[in-house]
Length: 377
Image (cartoon, helix red, strand yellow):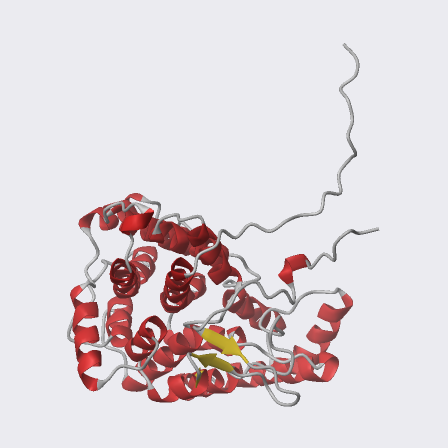
């Protein structure tokens, strides 16, 4: 008889409090994700990534003066340290992009002085967060261009965060509607309460490990296909289905084989993901721009087949994967894009953990052999 009720995956377990974000659980209708009390779909519609960064780190949307100062400080940090460039360029071009991003975060951390836990301040943590936010676009753009045999480009400082990244990744300024679609995705991905990677960052922080160790660990957690890799896997699903007229048959076969269909369902969204309509609208912009009605029809057919067969609705990864593909990103770059956004949430949680820290150390229930002795010669 079990002495304790085991909650595998910590399902349903409330381990701490947070003021960063929350997911509502209404009796009817989709759940809603709030950043510091603001519905994320409203933030995506009206705010830049820089404004959302300020909200997550400081608790409030910036005033005009605060935003100007914040943008100036971010732009001043965009150039990668020479040591980080050297580390990235020394690694194989065909390394997994998430391995390169994880290594880059660790290398960026190595350029900072080591602090004793008692020397750590809120200002220092926020300075490190700002540098990561400013430099991760340069890392991801460099990774994509190296994969394609192209010379890496520096981030321009006369453009906003999203526009500067797209220009560095593709070698030319993106159209305003593309920049906006990309920015919407970044806002939607920026934060999501105690997800696997965020919880990982908080666990590492609870040991009083240094700041960049926590973020590096979070990147490692995000690499897993059940977390950050889902938007990449969506493209595999769509490619396997092939065309809209095959969707019903494909879903039936996937169910018979008990396969998990990536991009559908979510641990905390039982009645639908409120982020999806906003991201789907951004995807629609890209579909019309690129003339890809075939992709839209395939997308809709798979979604409908899943709804009819299972009642399971799509999550944010389902529309974001095709949107990133239409923007021109390699599929293997989708999760690094996720990192660029989610670093905002991770760093907000790291600071929150520091300010009310307790070592995170759960118990386990032993199920191995009973006490025994070594016998024989």
